Image (cartoon, rainbow, N blue to C red; front, side):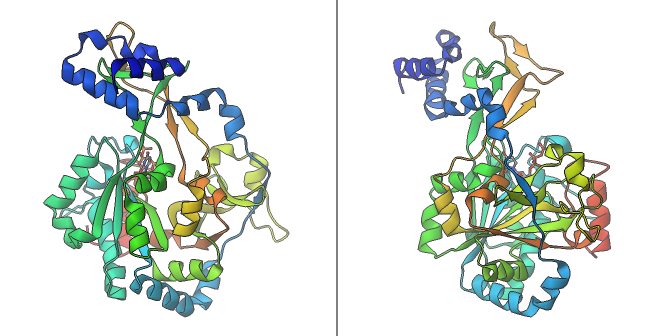
Length: 408
Ligand code: UTP
């Protein structure tokens, strides 16, 4: 893209200031800025003006889960069907590792964090060990797609290579980068990271499938006849990946998705809850729930909104392909964003000064034909690492690993 084209594109979005320092840049910096302007989708900025309408919720109603007891009754059948699908190469894993991991406070990708006590046990390693259980059980190498971002891609790839892919088959792992979104000030002006670079941030974990397709992986899915993708977060070190019983239960449900869920520890636990919204499966976040909703019970006194999502979903590729045409809600997060001001001076804010645009994975559920909420036992399958200490931390995850006989 040449300067005039960039100016035209920016003018149409009211963002001409991004070229304010153009004259002071080297030829290389100018080219890189023009490339970035060409690649950037500025249309997301309109979400700022429409935030209220975009994020307004429809009519919520409760959705129950297939319980642990119900799963146990049909375990053999589910496992048989799931294992067959895995052996037929119809099921793959997708690791979402594009997040910034800000709460953990490490500059490295979250998966590089070492939770070991007597030896090195990296988060990525734990996840691969979990996946290896199913590789062994099924006698099949399962393809693993790893989503990174511009910020952590090089480090993530190098780390896997350095550790010999933690014993996984290297040619079964495919890395791809998620899309980035521009960040803006509260009044909708795109921020500059420096004079020659627009400030961007990963566009949330909901853009994973469109990013995957943009990276050319749609062809792999088609050529290899892959029908199901088990998508999971980087930070739950106990989760079962491509769990045959979950895969079989979802396939037999006839739905286009399955979601692992846990019973909330109490109505106030801060997890998103699976429910129905205008008749479609949806997730309502803790912050969106009224006291009335949180505490509503059925005739037996059981809580109605009580199954929390743990970011471990099985999605049908057919459904995902169809959903590519649907617009997902753009969520706005107000954050502290380092940038430069109109004089070119560095700004390191102490308080939120701008907005990031994010898509959420659970918004995909609304676009699919049904979802099976599948209950798992939290003590066996849920040890998320969000913080260093306290709730959902390295500390709590270490305890849970010990309870499950995992040596650290
Ligand atoms: P979180 O919402 O916990 O965010 O991500 P995070 O970036 O890991 O941590 P904080 O909030 O900055 O402390 C849940 C999952 O979604 C992935 C994360 O890598 C994690 O697996 N994710 C999140 C992405 O892949 N891309 C994103 O843009 C955001």
